[in-house]
Image (cartoon, rainbow, N blue to C red; front, side, top):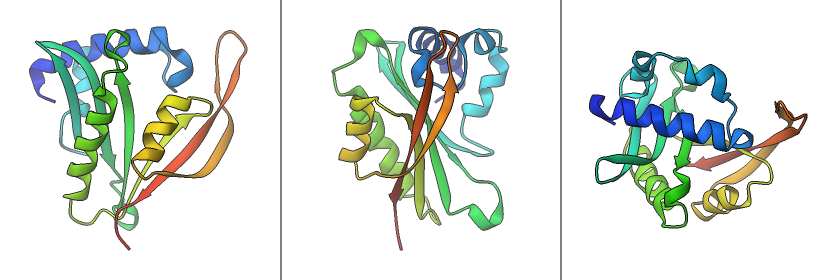
Length: 164
């Protein structure tokens, strides 16, 4: 992701958090108040390896971020976070394309052995996408998200081994 994409990225993220609170750990109200500059951490550098965006013209319609553990003993682990595709563009293979491009980048990054992610339990489409890419469930965190409407949702923890 490039600096000019930040505003469009934030707009997509705000819309996704509002429309799908069950899919994200962050909440829409808090994130809507975040300053645009705070999203610069999603640009490559620091712990962020990359943020990929999918564009329809100049509109950001999808995104995926990969972060690497900064601590020396666990630098062989990276995490996929913030996968999202605009409602208007679902079912077009954008998530699959973002994931494939992200995996290509991760596999080309020296020293990475494992890639993790968490996904809301019961999100069949996302779980199917990740399983199809080779991720395996290694755990489940019950009561991971508490929504304002009283729902309590678990998160499935998934792993893709990159090398031995």
